[in-house]
Each structure stands twice: as structure tokens, then as C-alpha cells.
Length: 278
Image (cartoon, rainbow, N blue to C red; front, top):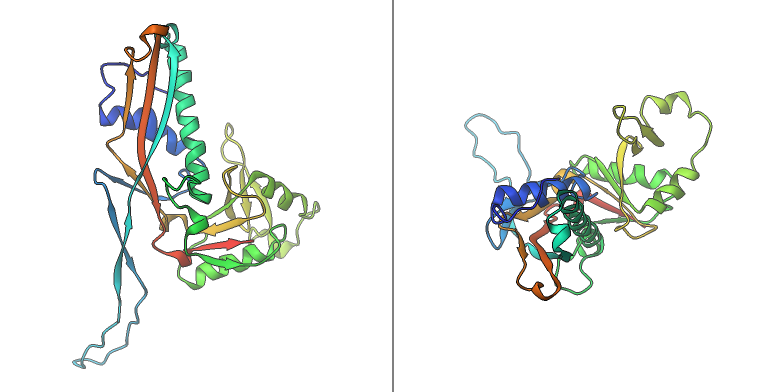
């Protein structure tokens, strides 16, 4: 992680390097393939277009209205703050600066993931998936069938299942109920069931269910799983965030106050592209 210096605290490029880019790497949900929308505006209007009906038409015949009704989903990025006071000695130490910076990003990522699933309990931040209009399925999350049903629901709506969100303990329950013997031959080629796909030689294996990558986040409630087309979820990020320091406020303690402010929210313009299993 880059060092925090007093000469470039207000640079948008610096803010992206210090906070936003690491946040997208560290946050489980932001690193799951969502569509990133950068904005300098207070609000973002996302177009929502319900599928219309196309018609086979004879040459020179009157054209039939496809009845596509567009609407707008208004997304207002909410303010998220990480604040810390460190000693002047730590502020002047390069290694300590990196640790503090990583700590700020970690605290932001934890809050971002939790707010994505359950929203901000104080009613100030985003509402989250718990309050979004999605497709609900009832099923045993430790069994494979509900996930297959969810995938088929998405495909029926023209979406692609490319992300499954769940709590790490939920993943453990699911994985431990899978057969430990080799799956039938007809299942291997289709990548059905639970899987651990190796990626490179230095990264952890990728968890999968029915060939769809699993993103395990402690922010997701236990015993609930979401199967989604992550590309149809918008992560709206304000680009005017700041990282600031102040020696004056902590002068009496020989300390340095460090404050990071960013604004973000999610847009779920296609509720049918998310299936909740519970």
C-alpha cells in the first residue's frame, strides 16, 4: 500500500490508490465482479429496462410497439468514515504508515460487506440486499438442489449466475455435507456439486458450487445464500473522497489524527437477477 503523505492528500488519484483500489481488492462483495460506477455527483440515475416483446414482421407491414418501459433507479452514495489517532512517531515511520493505512482499508471493507447484505442498522447508510426486491427460494442451504434451482431461475430471466454469496460458516456446512467420494462421471464434466479450483500457484483455491464461484463473507447472515448475476449489481462510488491528517487536533498528546471519507452505495436495478435462498 502506498504511503500517506501531507503533499498529496487531496489528490483523487492518490485517494483511489490509497483507499478505493485496495478497498475493491479487500472487500469480498466489491471484488465479486460487480459493475463499478464512478461518479462525482450526489446521485446517480441507473436506467431500468424491463424486457419487451420483439415481433416477426412482414416486409412493409406496420411495426408493432415492443412495449419497453424504461424507468430510473436513483442511487445516493452514503458517507462512510474511518478515523484513527496515531502517535507522531508512528506517523513518521514508513512501515507504521502502511500498517495504519491497511487498517483503515480493512475497517472500511468490513463495514462495506456488512452493509451490502444487511444494510446500515443506524438507518444512515445503504439499505442492502436484505431490503432489496429479489427472488426468494425456500430450501436447505446445505443441499445442492436449491442452488441449481436458483441458477435456472436466473437463466430463465436472461441473467447468468456468476456469484454465490454466503457466510463462511454456511459454506462450511454445505461443504461438509457433500459426498467425499468421487462424483458420478456425468457430473464431473458439468462441474456440478462443490468444488475447489486451483488458481495459479500462489493464491488460494476458488470455491465453487455447480461451477459458480462462491464469495464467503462474514457480513452475510448465516443460513442464507444469494445466487446472483454480479455484473447486474452496480457499486456506485463517489470519486471525491479524501484522506486527511491533522496534527493540531491532537497537539496536546503529540499525536496525528487520520481521517478517511468515502461515499458509496449499491444499485439493484434488476431484482430478478438475484435469488435469495433461505
